[in-house]
Amino acid sequence: MGIQISEIVPRKEISLNELKGKTIAIDAFNAIYQFLTTIRQVDGTPLMDKDGKITSHLSGLFYRNINLLLEGIKPIYVFDGKPPELKDEELQRRKEAKREAREKYESAKEKGDNEGMRKYSAQFVKIDDDIIKESKELLEAMGIPVIQAHGEGEAEAAILARNKKVWAAASQDYDALLYGVPILIRNLTLARKRKTSSGVYVDVNPEIIEFQDVLNKLEIDKDQLICLAILVGTDYNPGGVRGLGQKRALEIVRRYKFPIKIFEYVKENPKLELLFDWQSIFEHFRELKQSHNGEIEFKKINPKRIKELLVKKDFSEARIDSGLNKLKDLEEQQKQKTLF
Image 1 (tube, rainbow, N blue to C red):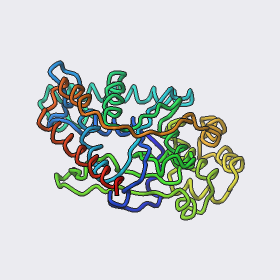
Image 2: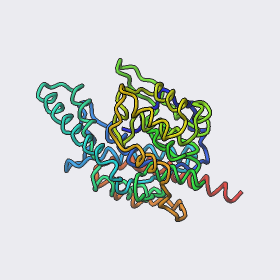
Image 3: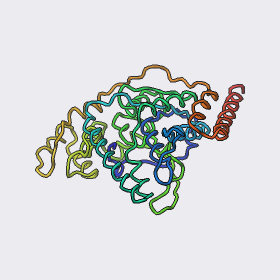
Image 4: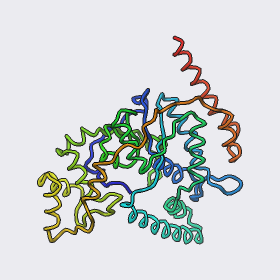
C-alpha cells in the first residue's frame, strides 16, 4: 500500500542519463511485484515455463537491469526480511484482498472477459520463496549486489542512502522518506512506455524526490512528516485517521507542530477517529537502525550461470545471447576506460 501522500510531495521528472554513474539501492520486492503484475499476456496470464512456473520476474530483472547497466547506473537490490509485528493488520488485509481478486478473476474467466482477467490477475500476485531464490540467483549471476535486510527492504535501502553507502533508494512507494532517505527515485524499473485506460501509450520517466526539498516545500520537519504519514495511513495503520485527507492532515501537522499536540488534537476532535497506537508507529520510523554493515561489491558477470538459469526456464537462447553480448560490450568499454 505505502503512504498516500502523492498529492502533496514535490518531485520532478529526470532522464536515465542523469543517473549515470550513480549507485542506487532498489527495493527488491517492490520491483519484483512490478514485473509480476505488468509482464503478462493479454488475458492476464503471467509468463510461465513449460512446467507452469511463473517467469515474469526473471524477464523483468534480466532485461530491465541490462538497460540500467547500459545507462551507467549501478543497481543493488535490497530484499525484505521478516516484517515487523506492526504490519500484521496490513498483511491480513492484503491476504483478504488477494482472495477477493482471485474470485473476481475466476468469474471474469468464466465469462471470457480478458480485460477483467488481466485486471484481477495482477491483484493476487504473491512473491513466494522460489521467486525470491530465483531472483537472487539471477541478480548475483549478473554481478549485481544483493542485500538481505532483517526487516523491510525499503527501510534498509533508505538507511543505506542516508549513510552514504549508495547515492539514492528506488521504490514506487514513498515510505523511504519516513526513514530519512536523502534522494528517492521512482519509476526506475518500470517500462519506458505505459498504456493508459484509453489505450494510448505514454512515456514513463524516472522521478526524483529530494528529502530536504519535501520538508522545505511542505514547511515541516522529519518528525512532522512521520506524523503526517501516520494521519493519512501507513502499512502499520492502514487507512490512517478516518475523515482525514492529505491536505487536511498537512494543515493539522503545521498548526500543532509537536507529535503529542498533533495527536491530542485528533483524540479530542469528535469528527475524527484514532483507532491505533500512534506512538509505536512513530518510534518505528524514527528509531530504525541499519542492519547491513558490510561492503557493497559489484562482481563480474557470469554469462554461463545466467544461461543456465534462463534456458531451463524456457527463455529464448537467442534473446539471452543478445542481452549477454550487450553486457560483454559494456565490460569491454569499462576495461578500456580503466586502461586509459
